[in-house]
Amino acid sequence: MSNEQLLNDLIKQGESEQLEFKTVVQKDSIAKNLCAFLNADGGRVIVGVTDDGEVLGIENAVSYKEELQAFLINAIVPDVPISISVEILNQKELLVFKVWGGSKQPYIYDGSIFYRKGNKTQKATSKEIASLIHDRQQTEKHWERQLVLGVDLEDLDTKLIRKTIEESIINYRSSFEGNDILDFLTHYGLYSNGSFTNACVVLFAKNPSKYIPQIRVRLTEYAEGKNDNALIRNEILEGNLFQIRDELERYVNGLGVRSVFDDKQWKRLDFTFPKRALQEGIINALMHRDYSSFSSSVTISVYPDKFVISNSGKLPDDIKVKDLKKNHDSHPVNPDIAHIVFLNGLIDKLGRGTIRMIEECKDAGLKVPSWKETSSGVVLTFNGPRGLAEKKERNDAVNDAVNDAVNDAVKEFINDAVSDAVNDAASDAVIKRLIQEVLLLLVERGKGLKDLMASFNVARATMQRDMALLKAHQFVIFKGSPRTGVYELTDSFKKEIEKI
Image (cartoon, rainbow, N blue to C red):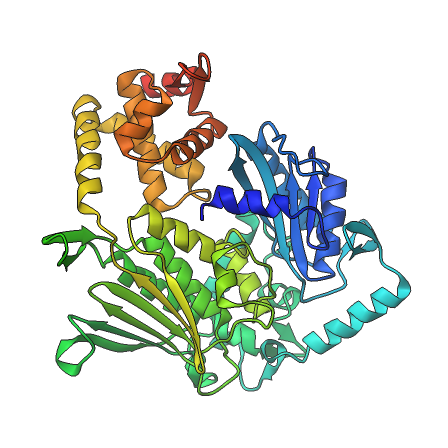
């Protein structure tokens, strides 16, 4: 199911305890509703939709996003991860805000505590405030907040902590001011009463396995099948969450092109696992694993046609495997760890990681990834190709025509411009297609929707979504009637290209 369909289905559900519609951008109203969601089970605010679900869209959604990121992180206290994204539905731009249920309730906006009742947001009563405070006290007993004896500041990677502080400011994700490390860790509940917490050790310790041995990750790679003779890599990765994540990212980036033989087509199929999807699966496993058990583990097993991530963590009680393939709300298993990962910019759309994995695998021509809940945890499997050879031949023909007509400097400029603009809104495979679409429009000086669909062998809805995304970022404009009109590069973007 496409992201557009998921968003459409969500809007059809109507406003509820976890969903609010706004027709226009009103900072005060958005902040009150997000505050109320934080004090409950999380939720979304969608701007550009009427109360009865009619999609109107808004103008200049991208610029609003940047403005609201800076506003909300300072307006709501204490600090909390807030996901803000520009989504395209019916070729109209929407702003979507999402928050988890907060781990540091009660949350305050403009001196007041807000609460959600049904589809209405209102100020919390004294009884509701008392309940929120009680829930927070229970949260403080969570494994993440338990103190680790014997850990000193010198046992932590202070460079990594300072980098996190810098990233959180650059990404407009933190209201913390200053550069004192202990103040920062205290601000996010990672340092208390002179001691560092379990979460702090997982995130920032130089040698965390000294205190939490179950943090290690096993990586195995098989040539064919699962037997000792086929094992070509078998190692245990050590380090904190970010060090392990970086090492696995380097491994994923080095996987390159893989090949399998299709018995039905009697041909070899070349494919690549979508790197961002694998990285999303890895960071999810590292964030949500059950660190509290000494027997917990994360194991990554790589086969010629499969990439398997086994995680000892459990799905939240309110989430089933089938829910992972659609928009879902849930509490993160390790909210303190998840928040710091968010500050580093490693997760963007809260609760949409699983959907993005599905989209990116589809875009790459691969089978849909699968999740399986077992007695020992959750297993995520990325599968091989559905049949890429014919699609690759068609795309190569378009690529060859464009590459012959455009010089390297222009190609590099367009590649960088499009990638930077839509990086958070599209998968790697979609970004590559968007770049080729812009190059084709440059060479052809405009093209109709049907011609674009034929050139890239995609469905009408897919190409409409591509053009809406490029239009939202001022790369293209539509000229003419709905039936015979064409998409062209905007004059402002063409002028930028002419400067090269």
